[in-house]
Image (cartoon, rainbow, N blue to C red):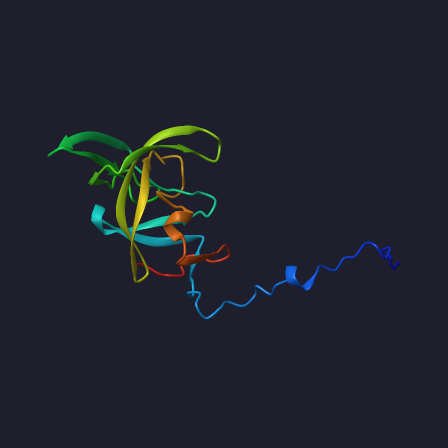
Length: 171
């Protein structure tokens, strides 16, 4: 092998102030819970006991499959009624859900297509942890997973192991 000598005015070394060791967690940082790239979750506020989810750190917002959505107002509150097929490859099983609308938001998918979606807030259960998250509703009939968990649902609590699946088991 040939070795390459750098001229003395060029250096491959950075000043020590720029090379802080960030490999060790400080005592004040919380320990993150490991998730696989797919996990079982529960959405108890919506009556969904178990649903497979794809954990997607590339997506900011979580998305739940809804094969129909009906908007209505009750007691001055904007609400939606929607149906989901919670199981992959099963359009016979359905759950009819009802939730308050948090807002309507334009979401751009990975293909660059923008869609206006209803946003709801609901409890998600992963393992033993309950957490309130925002979820958009969209038709995911062509997608393998009925629920996509985006990074805002995971923030500050979870890390993702892309080589693992179902690390938390069923809630």
